Amino acid sequence: MSMTAAHQITAGFMPLFDSAVLVAARELGFAAREGVELKLQRETSWANIRDRIAIGHFDVAHMLGPMPLACSLGLTPLASQTIVPFSLGLGGNCVTVSNAVWGGMAAHGAEPDLDPARAGAALGAFIRERAKAGRELLRFAVVHPHSGHNYELRYWLAACGIDPEREIEIVIVPPPFMADALATGRIDGYCVGEPWNSAAVAAGTGHIVTVKALLWKNSPEKVIGARKAWAEENPQALAALLRALHHSARWCQDAANRGDLASLMAEPRFLGQPSVIQMPVLTGHLHLGGGAKRTVEDFFVPFDKAANFPWKSHALWFYTQMVRWGDVAHTPENLAIARDCYRPDLYRAALKPLGVALPGANAKVEGALKAATPVGSAGASLVLGPDGFFDGQIFDPDEIDAYVASQKSGLHPA
Amino acid sequence: MVRSPLAVLVIDENRIRASIIEAGLREAGHERVTIIHDVIGIARRIAEIEPDVIVIDLENPNRDMLESMFQLSRAVKRPIAMFVDRSDQASIEAAVDAGVSAYVVDGLRQERVKPILDMAVSRFNAFSRMARELEEVRGELENRKVIDRAKGILMKSRGLTEEAAYALLRKTAMNQNRKISDIAQSLVTAAGLLGPMGDE
Image 1 (tube, each protein chain N blue to C red):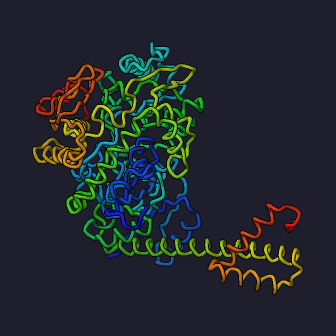
Image 2: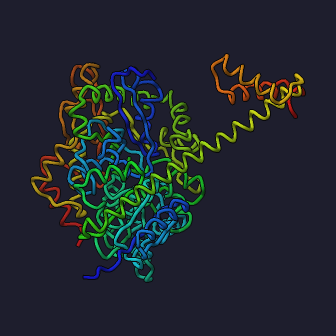
Image 3: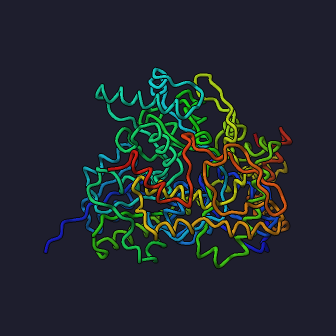
């Protein structure tokens, strides 16, 4: 890479498959073609990413979708104002349980079909059977409190009548340790991105019971978080980076590149896991455990369906879940911070010169699209959704108060 | 007023670095220092130790788990915040640069904690320096071994004395503007490819 690149950008990432768009942007030369010398630094915790963004070691980073909200809302120590100008894809997570829990669920009607409602009902029945026998709570792990994993796991449990605050224990475990913690019995289940579900299945120690792509179709996961002050001082660098990420995401989506992408991500400097374990996330062909297989449509979407557009409705849904589980108070000030965190305006401005199709709105009613739907904008074609929740609920970002209230009337923390 | 001594917990998977920190804390008069290398079962240990200050290395992948535990767990009786004082940006930058982070129970006065953090930062930096120097020495030793083998090859194949063999390597390196160890490595590789001529 030339020393004379117009823009030098340092990005942090965690060893997860959904850092692929960022990794490929550098490794396939998309960043260099936009005049960006992109330096990637692998990190060992989300806390490190937050700290290094805050003190300026990183300009941007691979982040959990709710994390920039938590930073901007001041929910974590040492956090700085962080914005989201780009989403790194939709879907990609699974819920995996131990063989023992799968046995208990199967005894209560679970089938190896990934159906969230059926799996949730079986888990609920198993949990109550255990409670009656005086056994301790099942312990499930997620990667971070302010993560899509935590909120979708809780959403699923609550919608299936399981109180995530009282009927189950939720702890934090780093992604690469999940399969091991499950195998040694320190946890009974987890919600994490790939390849850490397929890794447990391959080891014979876990069963995948449902997936994010069925809990909420085409739902947000990782994003590019940018330090707000840096983004404001370097608008051209940011725009060049977003164009590079756009080209990279399109390359990652192309089925012809799956083998190359899996090999790239398998390298020790990225995931350091065999490339065969990287394939399920790309094909949606999942081994569920015990020989069962299922193909999930739109399992992980790095580019199609406007996957990179930072919808304000995605940020606001995360905000409603932060309110629901007591992370933050629902106030007009906090709502305004959440509304301003995701920045579709910056995404549009950066991509406009490319003449590609862009959504005309900044937010959408989540759960309204029952099927893939073409939308016209800027003269080019674009297909959105489907974006339904498995329980049929609708999230209208213009009706936040009503949504927050409806969730309070159900299961909620003490 | 007699102040109770602070309980300090050091979480570091690197045993050598942990003992360097521990030694520093003891030299500074801190008696209640605990070192933990493995985070399994750490909630119970924290409940027992009731630390006022927790020092942890940034390479530790369990920071997210620990932070959530500090905020939520009943095992931690007093809320634990991060760093001495959020307004002390210079301290925070120095700590992250050195690769260390600190958590402090709420309400603890800055002047009591800052010396601990400063000490941890300087010891982390000293450790990194030491590790770097060790790496250099190791590289130096490797180079010397390769040069010795190259000298052996030259002595055997061209009937040179050891001094003459070294002089030839040095002259070639100077002519080609490369390091002696690079020239030696090329020679050893070439000799290996040529087979029985090499130094078996």
